[in-house]
Length: 93
Length: 419
Image 1 (cartoon, rainbow over the protein chains, first blue to last red):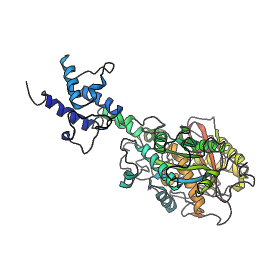
Image 2 (cartoon, helix red, strand yellow; image 1 turned 30 degrees about the vertical axis):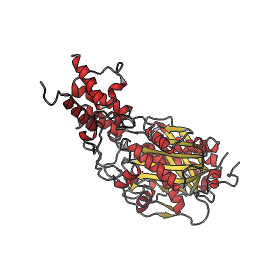
Image 3 (cartoon, rainbow over the protein chains, first blue to last red; image 1 turned 180 degrees about the vertical axis):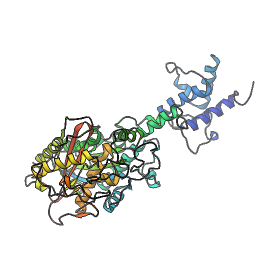
């Protein structure tokens, strides 16, 4: 099963869309976010509230459970790391 | 004790963004209470409110869309007040000698309501956690403090409708005792379902625009916005060559200890707050030359307040009050926790313009009240000599506050200078 929704690239596109929509980043498109660009600080400029917001939305959209006790902050470093993190969580089911 | 002067004013109201919109609106005698565009008002006894208009100018001054509307109103009013006070960058006043004293009842309540409406599916869109960021009542005051980089005391008062006046009192006292040299005092509140439905449930609203001090008055109209004043020690203002708009000469507070929502009918507590302010200023009651009243337009408030004014300024319940009385609430509605803040701005404007704004609202004044209510057109005040304005705010829970503001040329007793 290699449809658009489950390929690495497909998941990354969905994450980008979720970031833009859920964080209200008006005027941005998925193409403007690079897979390895930092999401926080100097990169996209997200902050800790955005991280929390993103966590809630990712849980809902990808049907995963994120235990905030065991999150590695590196998982939220970029779109690529988030994709690996979600894949890992999905693999647990 | 240090002398405390007013060097800057800022306002956001149903008339628009800025002090000049407020000045023109209040002077016109017209009301900004009308059918709101954002607030849902279905199913209530009234469908009106004084809502702040959105415009591009506001966005230019307050670009951070992550802030709540109350935060943005607060920030606009504070920046305007600081700008008018002529505080340049870098500030000649150390940040540790600056304070922020704010009052309010709602903070980010409108955004929190939207969050929960989305969460339960009653409104479209994702619930955004960030929209809860200003839910705490200290949101607007903290937004102002962050913006100004204040390192002195930052305090938020929330005593219902007395909050704004109490915040001004707190700033006044802080400067007087030498804690800070420069303070932004004010308040911001936003129209939201909780307050709109709450006052509706209390049957405290007029179905039309409120009519303070009128015979046919039937309740209040809600409003939103912010007011801010820059208060400063006289020596700080002098050192940086700031223009003194007015002088805060006294403030007093009291409690009715009577009822959760109703004022004590004789106005005993309200009068005590006015008397306390007069005592602090060393002024005689006859020195008061204008009153910006709480004047909500509810049958209970306006009669209780008139009793209080006659007792405090006229010497007895049967005494007469020579000072003309106005209420800004007929024009801009009741701004709840920020009412005392924007009405202090209106009081300074009346002193500066030597003209008391009329009380918007239809119908003749209530002759039973025994006070001289300014209706129709603005009332000229004496062209010469010191002026003293009294601004009152009375809250649910019986909290009362009175602030006395004098013209720069006086408005103080002979020994009221620096002691």
